[in-house]
Image (tube, rainbow, N blue to C red; front, top):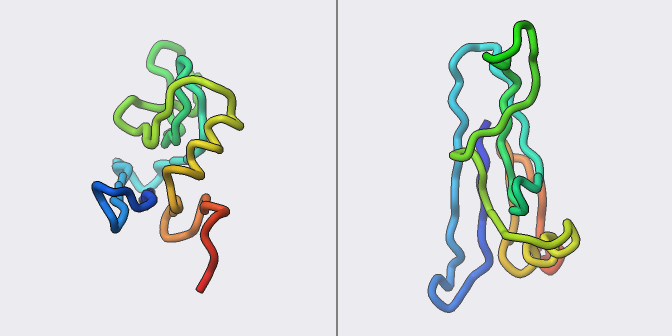
Length: 108
């Protein structure tokens, strides 16, 4: 899975920086998903892998790793996070498809 985050322009970066994350493909059967999560009071976009819990026999589930967390923002509600995203991020694309887009931007 390839995730691209395009940030809004700033004074320091008038073009807006781009951040990319590519999840590893260890086998042809790997399954990944992305979503917004609050982990320990920090909101983020997390890439999670469907895998087996090593501590429990036959226990499968979605697991995230610290190095697969993007666009982190501490504290607040999901509404606060959305407001922060509107100020900070232009769009998020996953595997070339728009996952989230800033409502302030217009096509054209």
